[in-house]
Image (cartoon, rainbow, N blue to C red):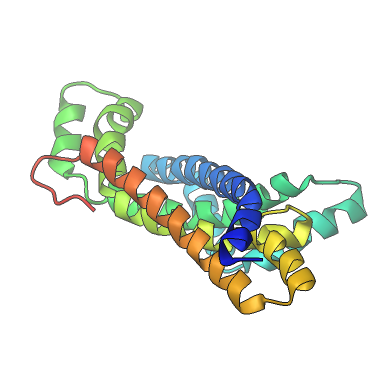
Length: 217
């Protein structure tokens, strides 16, 4: 078996790796954006809950949370599919970090613009939607890229719940060929290739929506 053959067999798990990364990234993005927006509104009852959520989920190891969801919840009558278990563990942990990224990006919005919009009669929701969110998303692109990269690096945990992604394929291939060095070198190459493709895509999107005068990532 040549090194190219090893890469070809490992590539069978690429689609699952991309699927896990995409699902967890979308989960983290949507939940994190919702949390940051609620916190930005400054609602007295919700702000402490958002702070508690980000504090807890940033402190819980992803693997512990994944095992709790996938192996623990069935004990109380809730059977969770593997992909959903990844979303409820890695996705929610990512959302806590992204919420902090968005909070910092919100703070970069010029307060004078918010004040001017309110003086024009815009409601707080309208200010958030039309003034703050568009700018915040642009400011937060570097932080989002870092977090999405972390999600990709944590995606191998999916093999522990039976998803046949790249790492699972590598373990099976190593067991049959006993060529662990070559197999895991190929794994590293595949992950790096996925990372570069994702980074190039984000750079293209960032350049398209870049704020004039700002340096792209």
